[in-house]
Length: 268
Image (cartoon, rainbow, N blue to C red; front, top):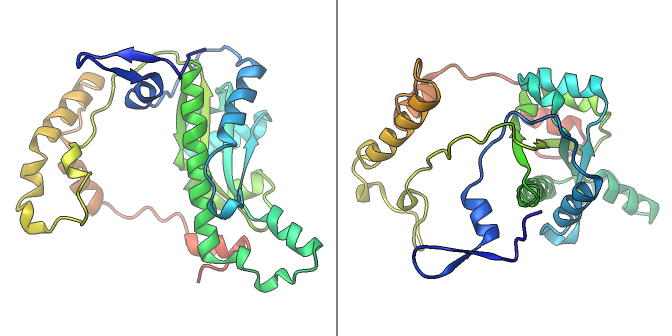
């Protein structure tokens, strides 16, 4: 187990907390060794994630541990990621207002028009679930595990709802696979900090006449990274990737708002 309360020395003469080092060096791990995770480690990770910040103290999220092989296979097909079926630990994180609506109903509240079904609290629950995913991932990496976040469960939300027997007022947010890494990939480059962090107000376009030019160095870093990963078909660069994605046909996965409404939330 890694001690996240310790610190590591840096060249600047100060020490960086090990938790910060974990966050700085996070990588997506898509292949795991066939090694079970100790139940005590799993419990510690889950207990850490339960302390995630939650809006209005509602804790409007829940998690399914996916153990059934047929359900795992179904999720893998939806995600287009066969190996995830063999992850030592596979979670699906959910918005969960079902629990809170049951509480209200048992205490005599007419829940038909309850605010717990509102768009506002839907998105609060969504944010809570995403924060819980990140907390789980960080805690897992402190124990030497690797993680892959699965936004691809949204490729077929109705099928995920069916597979997991989700009742009304419960909605899938993200999947998360955990295990010991079979290999550790190179750290992927990120956009320059000055293109993501600003002071006080969002900068006007006149401050950056050409975004493509401003990101030219990042383009080279992205190209070099993917050339090392896949020399036969490297990604040209970040800006060309964005442009290609912008003009590609929209992958219609269905009306997301209708799916949310079908689960009993009022987002219209």
